Length: 447
Image 1 (tube, rainbow, N blue to C red):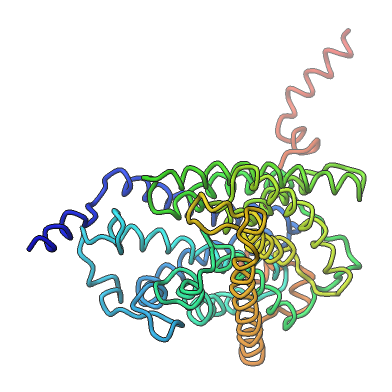
Image 2: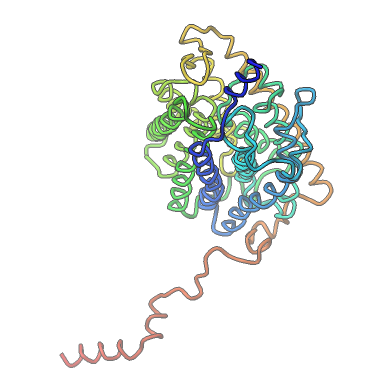
C-alpha cells in the first residue's frame, strides 16, 4: 500500500502552464511552413513562385490527415523491433482521453500529438526547395504521401520514440537535426539525382525574383523556430527549454555573421540572400545541439555552420547536381554539423549529463552521433531515390520541357503570381485622367 501511495504521489499531474506553452509552440511551428513557402517562393523565378508556395502548403493538408489516420501511431506507438511503432489507440486519435497525459509529462497526449504533427508537416516541405521549377504538382503530392509513410514516420520513431534504435543508442537530437533536417536534405539529394537538372542549369540566370520575400520568410522561420526548439523539451520546469531558446538565438546570430564574412571574403559583398541563408543554417545546426551545449558552444556551432554551409552551397556546381534552393547545402550539411558537434561541445550540464570531447567526455558520444547521422542519411537517401524512380517511371515526376520553359505556375496552377495587366504606368495614368492633364498643360501655355 505504501508503494502504491508513493507511486500515486509521484505521478505527474496536468500542468495548465505547460499545456498552454506547448499549444503556443505548436502554433509557432505551424507558422514555419508558410514561412518556408515565402522563403522558397522569393528564391525562385517569377514563373515558379506559386508552385513553390503550393509545394509547401499542400503538406499542411496531406500530412495532417495521414498523421491522424496512422502517422502518430507509427511514430510514437509501442515499439516493434526498434524500427517502427504501433498503438491502436492512436489510430485516428480515437482512443485518447482528453486529459490523458503523454508518457511521464504534464501535457495531454493530444497536445504532444499536434506538436509533433507540425514537425511532420514541415519536413517534406523542406525537400521541395531542391525540386523547384520542374516537378508535377500531382506527383509531388503523391510523393509526400508515400515519403512520410515510408521514411518520416519510421525515422521519427527511431530518433524520438521509446524503443527506437537511435533513441536507445543514446543519439542526441533535441529537436530534429537527424529526424527533420538530415532526413529532408538526404531525401532532396536522392530525388534530384533521379529527376535531373532544370532546363538551363549552369547556363541561364536563375536569380531570386524577390529578396524581400526571402527575408520575410527567413524572419518567419526564425520566429517560429523558437517554438520548434524550445517546445521540444515539452515544458520548462527545469530551465532546459530556456537554455534551448537562448542557444537558438545565439547560434543563429553567429551563423549570419559567419556566412556574411565568408561571402565578403569569397565574393566581395554582403548579400541579403546570404544573411537569410545564414540564419537558416544556424537554426538548422543548433536544432539537435541546443539542449546540450552552452551559449558559448552555440556561438561556435553557429559560426561553423554559417561558414561551412556557405561553402557547401557551391558544391552543386562542382558535382553537377541541381539542388535548386540549396536544401542539401543548408539542411543536410547544417544538420550533420549540428548533430556531430554535440560530440565535441556537449557540456554535461544541459539536457543530460553526457559530455563531449572538449568537456572531458571523450569521443563516445561523437561515435553515437555518427551512427544516428549516417544511419538516417543512408536510409532517407536510398528510400527517397527509389520512390522518385518508381513515380518517375509510372506517372512521371517532371513537367514537359516546354511547360518548364514557359513557367510551371501557368502549366500546373493556371495562375501567375503577379498580374501586371492593370498596373499603372505613364500611359495608363494619362488615359485614366485626361482632363486634369489637359488642364495642367493649358495652365503652362497661359503662363
